[in-house]
Length: 331
Image 1 (cartoon, one colour):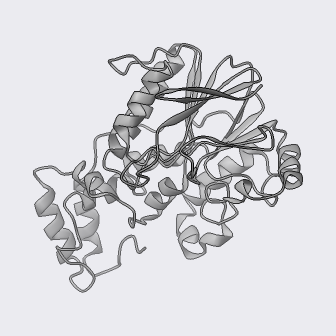
Image 2: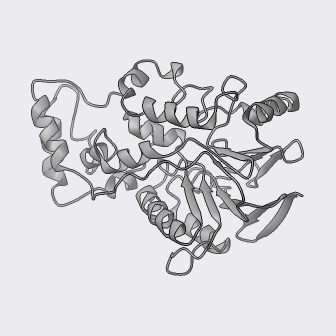
């Protein structure tokens, strides 16, 4: 999707977008790639704007209280990406993760928000899956004027009907110098905690030998200073290629032998991924707990039969947690 068209009014367009800046959010330092000695890990998959279900799940697993303050102590929360798109309240979910990250760190714990393919799409300017409520979250009293100025900059390519209120502000917020864009570009694509690899898509046989640090640095570069090259040839990149860690789905279908190779190359004992929605509404397990698929369709507008779910890891015990109960998946 084209991000901004070049025109004789390019300077004016830049002024409009600068004026539409979202509220400030400072970029955080990237999370470490390999972390050990964590007593409790809680992993949550795709949120897709399902803020209410996300909040209720965090309460059920004991990470936040009724006021949404961190009470998880030294626990580590891993959110495997795809907070945005498909649902209306992604901005609230992003803001919550941002705040909890700081609170958890002060308590001796951690929150690891990972970047998913839909965050990458947002950074690349691909708005095909944006929910109307996501635009609405950026609307201010100035939005109508900003929208009209934006359309007038290129009337051949833009119309008011195709430019919802809030679009200009959203593009700016997730753009090259936008506050949300800068924060998302600072996030890791992959994190390893207690020997368990977490990411949105998965490692493939082609990417498994790359170090965690290398993957994260390359994805950040491809969505940062090299973003134009990524737009020109996305399949040649880790950030947007179908075999990269944000997009690869094969971990749910490849053989156990291939999974064993990926685990051996990455130095991991298990892999936890989102991205591919479980058809049962429950966390998927492959090969006696070598692979866990934790996207259970949290956003009901996208997956009517889905639910919120978390994977708890304490030592060698992997437990699925739902609003209505728990299920041990691996000991």
